[in-house]
Image 1 (cartoon, rainbow, N blue to C red):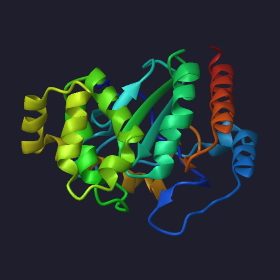
Image 2: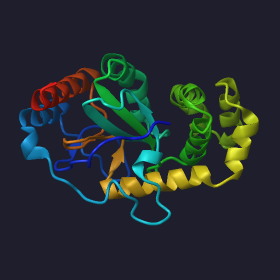
Image 3: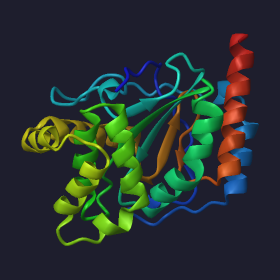
Image 4: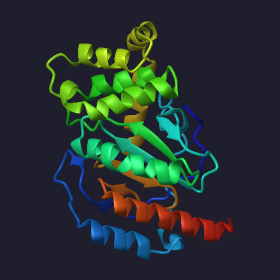
Length: 247
C-alpha cells in the first residue's frame, strides 16, 4: 500500500448520477453532470474543507493509511474512490469503466487513484467481503488485486450466500493469498480499525452512496458515470491542471 500524497480535498458541489444509496437516489442526467463539471473554472470550485488530512478521533487512521493506491505518486490528478463491494453500480464501474481508466490515465502517470473499500450499510455480507479484501491487502498489491477482481467479478456468489466466510476464504486461496496469514489477520483488530476509519472518513466527506469519487481540487462525483464521460472528465482535469502548473 502506497503513501497517499496530496493536499486537501476541495468540495463544493455533489453531482448526482447512478449509484447505491441508503436514501432515495438522485439520478440527474449524466450529460448535465458532465457539462456542469467541465464548464466551471477550477478557481470557482476549490473550497477547502478542514479536517480531512487528520483523524477526527484518536482511533481514526489518516487517509494515507487507508485503501489501495495505483499510479504515479506525482500525478497531477488525484482521486479518492469510495465503493462498497456489495454495490451493483460499484461492480459495474470496476468491471466496465475502471480498466479503461487504468490503462489510459493511471498506467500513463496522469492519475493517482486511491480505492477505499467502504461499507454503506445496504448489503448484509459487505463486511465479510471488506475484511477479506483488507486481509489480502496486508499481504501486498498482487494478492489484493487478484482477490479484489474476484470480489467484483463473482459478487453474486458471496453476496447472496447464507455463509459468506467459506466462499470468501476459497476465493482468497484461489487468488494466491497466504491462508495462514489471512486467518491470522481475521483474528486481529487491524482490519477492523481500517474499516472503521474508512467509515469515519466517509462521514466527514459526506458520502451519500457508492460509488463516490473525490477528485482533489474539484467537486465530488456521486455515482457511476459512463466510461466515455469519465474519460472526458479526467482528460479535462489533467489538461487544466497541466496548464495551471505549466507542466
